Each structure stands twice: as structure tokens, then as C-alpha cells.
Image (tube, rainbow, N blue to C red; front, side, top):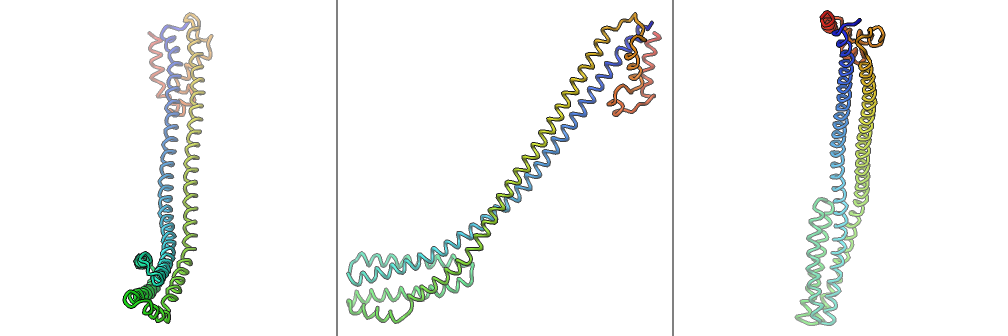
Length: 312
């Protein structure tokens, strides 16, 4: 018949083994989940930093390309406004010479000032292109010559009347200032049109690259987070299943302890006896064997304690 100390030792051994297995399993699961979370977080941050840097660079290139396209369009618009304002000034000047209306004279003066403003603006816009600067200098000379001719005709009309104005206009007609303005304006516009096509293509290419980089970055980040979530979900499900299994085992152990009668010999419970033997040897569960290999020396204190309790 087993003694009281041996019975208590045998009862406590399965509970201690189950508690050790539970603690070890929780530690392994927590460590695995933490490693996955940290790895996914670092990978996502690295991806976002790389994608953000590349996207920022492409956005800067896109802004530069769009700015060059807008610059070309502005040059062409300024050329068109310059030629249109010069033509409007000529029309207003001739109307004044024919009708002597002050309104037409004021319109001529205003448009002549607008022509000067457009000419100065065009010089600033083409400062980055030496070829366009040479054409601009020639255009400036032709426009100024034409403005001087019109101003001379108006002055002759105001001092000497229509005959003098007609003489000045006839003499100005022998020159080619108006034709020179048209030819230079068309040449400068053609140069800008040639520059516009590659700039628009570059802007479209950069815009497409920026969009692709954004989509790829978002897709990869989403994939990482989804994979991380699924991995954590699998770990949590495995943990819940293992916890249920351990809880069932603990229930069985407690039921066996409750049914155990100290007056009955231990040989009637061969499973309990073998389990206690395995616990004393340090090999009760595979996780315990993985965590701490079977070592007879490590099992000796437990066996000695149980033997002392038995003798007592």
C-alpha cells in the first residue's frame, strides 16, 4: 500500500508538468507572434520609406516637366499677344488718322504700351535659350522700328495734317519692319513648338512612372500587412487549440486525482505510475524534452525529495 508522502508526490507531479508545458508553450507562441509583428513592421516601414523617396523624386521630376511645358506655352502665348497687340496698335493709329477721334488715339497709345510690356516679358522668358535670345533681339529692333514709324505718322498728322501723315506712312511702307516682325515671331514660335513635344512626352512619362510607383508601393504594403495578419491569426488559432487541449488534459488529471484513493495500490493506475516516472526523469512531454534534454542528474533532486517523503 502506498504511503502518504508518495501519494502526494505522485499527485503533484502531473500538475507541475502540465503547468510547465503551458508556460513553455505560451512563451514560444508569444515569442513567435512578437517576431512576426516586428519583422512585418520593419519591412513595411522600409518599403514605405523607399517608396516614399522614389515617389517624391518622381513628383519633383513631374513638377519640373510640367513647369517646362507651361513655360513653352507661355512663350508662345506671349509671342501671339505681342503680334496681336502690334496689329491692334496699327489699326487704332490708322483709325485716328482717318477719323481724328481721341478714343482711337488713346487706344493706340495703350496698345503701344502693351507691345512694349510683352516685348520685355518675352525677353525674360527666353533668357534660358541663346538662340531665342538672338531672335528676340532682332524682334525687339523690328518692333521698335515699327512703333517709331507709327509715332512719326501720328506726330506729322497732329502738326501738319493728313497730307504729312500720308507722306510719312508712304515712306514707312517702303521698309519691311512689319514683315520682319511677322517672320521673326513665326520663327520663334516654331522653335518653341519643337521644344514642346519632347517636354510633353517627358511630363507624361514621369506622370505614368509616379502613378505606377504609388500603386506598387500601396500594393506591396497591403500584401505585407495581409500576410502579417494571416500569420498572426494562424498563430492565435493554434494557441487557442493548444490551450483547449491542455485544459482538457488538466481536467483529466484533476478527475484522476479526485478518483484516486489512497487506500488503493498505485499499480491499479499504470498510466499515473508511468507518468510520475517520466516526470521524475524529466521527460514527461516533448516540449520539456525540447526545452531541457533528459538529464538524470536534473531528475535526482525530484526523485530524492519524493523518496524522503516516502520514507517519512
